[in-house]
Length: 204
Length: 255
Image 1 (cartoon, helix red, strand yellow):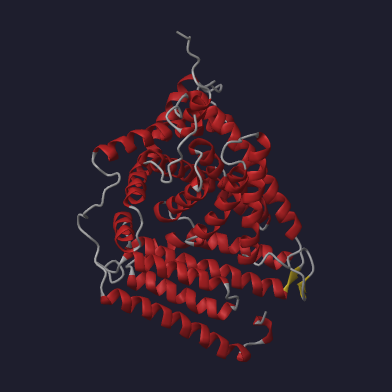
Image 2: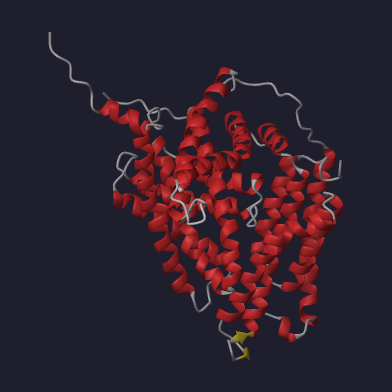
């Protein structure tokens, strides 16, 4: 049976993306509260140490793509999460977070798009995290004037490593765990596979 | 109502984004400092954020700026000002100052924007004036409500987990990183369930697909155009003045 892919997202899927954005926005916010104290204690090294957590900001895109399996979902989810952070939670990065989110979303979604939203192996998640972190690094480096600093390569390495671990592999762990709870039964991640493996009927 | 609260949210959001993007190409500390002062004035007199609230709202931006300044002063090659105990360069200090001020300009304007714009007005205005699909607007508004309930739900999850948590010697529950992770996962599961219910509720109220009428539309008039032109002219004037003043600056302030 061939599937008909709808062009637009269902309201259910849109609200799910918002719900994920809200949940991750809230968790980031809690994390940032805890983190700020540590960053102040670490002084100038705090700026570097924050790169370790960068991947956490990417995770919503692969999770959303894996659940909804529709083009553009990663970008939309990432932008919605940034809107939640800026407008509802008052993130100190301000509106430029929207630009960063757009770039991250494109990077994170690309590996899944290349697999036509049908392949979700470990390597693809890792590539998603690496690409999301790598693309946004160019923008951050431009914005914060990292080019010409002594620590440019170190920054890049930390961010991509964090992207692979927190923004890629952790997403797969999370998606698998969410799936086991049964809350995703109404979404494409479960229903698509049900369609792909038809029930065998007895003849006659 | 303050002067800024009466203006159209879409126009304000657009201006905020435009000015934020403009600061990305500026690095001169004097120009950026002037823009920062203007931004604080907008927050104070335009959006009515006063005294203590104005200071507190900026604390996260200041701590962020301080980190940027410190790391640039220490990690950028150039004329060495101080060699021990750490190496500080003049270029690093000036560039760091510029980058830190960028963040502060955006911060002051964001404070002004958020203080003068209720989320509901922003979403309604975006559907009216920026062609945002109402399905996304209502989903985001529902998300705003869900967010308000999350801290309480987090407390519920933590309380439920504390019932079975291992105890310390004094009888209080022991909490670790793993427990926080489990609570975060429970919160996520709750959120997926909640969003499915919310979507059903929205659909049953007809908030899905058809063309819609709006309750209490947000006005957009000539004064909003005036605000847009005024902000663009003011920022341009500050930037031009900054370029004109640049040759008069002492050499240690130049990049």
